[in-house]
Amino acid sequence: MLSFSVPLGKLVRRLSRLRGGGSAFPGLVVEKIDPGFMQRTLASLPHGVAVVSGTNGKTTTTKMVVELLQSQGLKVFTNRSGSNFTRGVAASLIGDVDWRGRLDADIAVLELDEAHAVHFVNKVQPRYSLLLNVLRDQLDRFGEIDKTARLLEHIASKTTDTVVLNREDPRVARIAKVLNGLDAVNHPSVRYFGLDESLRSTFPNDDEMRTTGIGPSPSGTPVAAATGEAVDLPAADVVLRRVGARDADFEFDGGTVTTAMKLRGVYNIFNAAAALSLTRAILGTGPVDTPKLVKALGEVAPAFGRGESLTVDGQPLELVLVKNPSGFRLGLKSFPAGGYATMIAINDNYADGRDMSWLWDVEFDSLREDGVEVLTGVRAYDMALRLQYDDVRFGVVEPDITAALRAFIDGSRGKPKRVFCTYTSMLAIRRELAKITIVEVVS
Image (cartoon, rainbow, N blue to C red; front, side, top):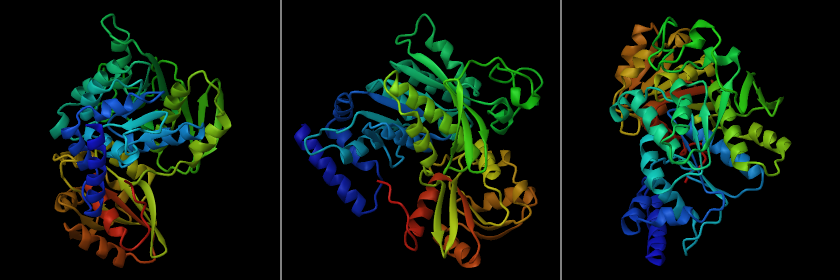
């Protein structure tokens, strides 16, 4: 079966890429004809599998972990296309194995959608897992956020070695109690990444976005950022102490290191602390070249569409992915509007989430001064209505992304540009931009 499934999968992958098809389709084909392909291939890796999941930041964090491990000489397999469903992992494997199905790697670091990660860990138990956050996102898929927390809890329960948790997110942090319970099966070790107290108000968790700071939060954990009160938090393996314009301070092993950062956005820098903690867990007690590790962290560039900067007509054009209220708020805070022409592209396809009501939980005041040049995507008119309520002026409303992007570029020549976009609109915009500028091909 193996000698048949791998060549067929590679052929389907090549044909799919020639036609511009989806990156996960070859994985679907291989799943059907050889259901054990993924489990069999990943079982051969000496350091096993590490899973990265959570609502926000999976793609960039996974990229960071991969590059940090590579800086220490490890060969890493990852689902680089960002197709974070199980069949997306299978499709990526097809691209990396040789014709006999052998994978030349020491470890797999995989970004996985919360719901699909549950199916994955039932087939392949990860040795390590990193759980980033739980926020309102795609409620048409996940329902209430406590359901999302239970999905992450299941991932943690299947992990055999180490689980890395965000101590600042109450729903994520309390997973540790489940892992330490008497009825737990694997009892993995737990470590945390966290924030300096001065930064906590910058990263509100979902409860803090819906409470006044008086009384318990919906998760049953005190809301610290809103009140300024101290909270009894566990010690963290890595703490983000400071975020500068182009650098950041991280504390670990009793000391603080400062490094320049190519990544932009405060949320990306916090995810760097998460990536550093997971990397340290994987490297374990073996030799670690810490200066090289920190240098690699500072050189990580944004993942595609996540603060990615392209060049159009000699000016930068930044793509900022937004997919829930927390992400959009942090995007607006991290990328000030002043001096930039702005476009917003909102789709409601399956990968974006059908329910766009979360746009009403985002404050767009920061866009008032310069306004928004173009609104596009399936929900362009919904976005226009939302901006009207915040007294933000806007120009062209064009649901067709190709026409809207052309109008945006033509109307803002000579100015740097920024596009806030949902996932599928980001993919469409990158395809169009590839016709006029250099865009990294992610396969």
